[in-house]
Amino acid sequence: MKKLIYILIISISIISCVDLNEDVRSKVSTNDYYKTLSDADAALVGLYSSLTHNYSGVDLGLAQASWSYYNRLYIVSFATLTDDVTPGLKGNDAEYRATCYFNHTSVGSKFTHLWRLSFEIINRANAIIDRVPSIQADTASVNNIVREAKLIRALLYYNSVRFWGPVPLVLHETTSLSGLQVSRTDSATIYDQIKRDLNDASALPSARNNYHVTSGAARSLLLSVAVTQRNWTEAVKQYNAIINGGYGYKLFDNFSDNFSTTKKNTEEHIFDAYYYADGTTGGTGNVNAVAVSEAPIYGFPGFKAKGSATMGVNFALRNAYKKGDARIAATFSDTIYKDAAQTKKYYYPHFRKFRDLTTTTVANSGVNYPIIRFAEVILNYAEAQNELGNTAEAYTAINKIRTRAKLPDLTANLSKDDFRDAVFLERRLEFAEEAFVRYFDLVRVNGSGKRLIEKAVPALLNSGLKATDSDGGLSYESSLTKNQNFAANPKKYLLLPIPYTELLANPNLKQNYGWE
Image (cartoon, rainbow, N blue to C red; front, side):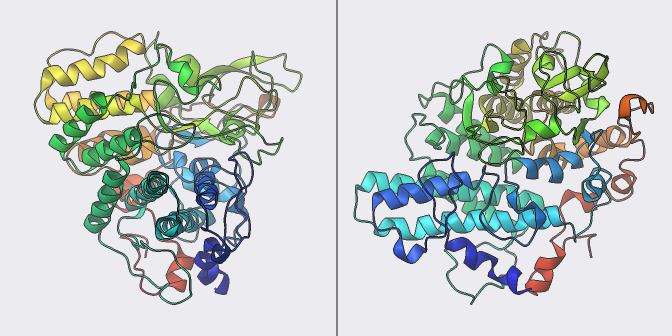
């Protein structure tokens, strides 16, 4: 238990080097740091690296301590809790499969890692917010570093309050063992703090600068928060601020350009987890390790590099795309090799968004992972305008997404409920395999979320897998019983369990409904 208690203390003594493509979490004490603007810049790089790098440098007491936030941790913790993903052909880890079938518990190491990593990143942000203002340097530069840290803190709390509901709200750097046993803060207070941080961050510059967040990212997240809270007027206000803010955001003409290593930080990209493909065959370093997990065992035509096939496609998702949808080719590899000699092929869809076609090592992917892109801004706006009864604006927005996908305009004169369903379907197709989108859509329970949950349960209960085929060492697995637990008590699964080890270490934490 001592290791659990010390985790926040350990995390505050970690400062970065100067480049995202290195493992920036070194062991320099904060007492010797934050003296110059260069120190502050390096600490900020370390904060960004916390979102991506596959080596933490911190002993979290777990085998998964190398799994970064917008990377493998997404696959093992959240993609599997949706109706988009099933265990892959080689996804044999017992805890991973339990998550896929809604048999996970509060003792799962993957959710424990997520909890600890979330607060590690928040603590890094807090250290910057607390310490950087005292540096004697250019005021604008100092202020912007603090604003970037506030945006990332807001992002982590925005995700956390949707994962667990009330969580401890810690707004200052943890520097001693005293005061670690923090109680959960009500969700409304957390949302208020998220919006304060994002409003502060909206004063950031608007111009893109590699991995750095901008005022456009702050406003895009404020728009997302407004939609989550069903504040439709505020959502439209933030959308207008984005459109009129001179950011130059627009949809790529080709959907696949969102996942190109040559078009990073352009047009549609608002905030990405940034990858450099500096890793190895094991997927270490600053690489998008989702690529190896999504890739088939023996490769696929046109790209023979082999993957681990950890993550599988729910056939219900693949079947939801209409013929001619331009997103299909960028989202799936429908035909894969069936044998090591790469001579036999068969139809078995695998995800493919994050495979880097510029490298022959599938684990060494430099494809960025979108945290929010302009397509989501448009669909959030479409949802808000529909809820406000502004039909023309809502249709114009959603049809921008459909036009890019080479689909006809949405059927006219839909009811408000049917249009809402159409938005959620479009989100599912547009953002398949992108971090947390489908998961958070499924757990939105007020208003539209309730209808979504009701409509999603049949899909969750039937993945569309039908056969068993052991030929070539591959096997299908029917998941018709995948989510019986979900169907029996869906309310339980609207929040994650508070990790059991954290409850033991902090008696002020209380478990979520259904996980006692």
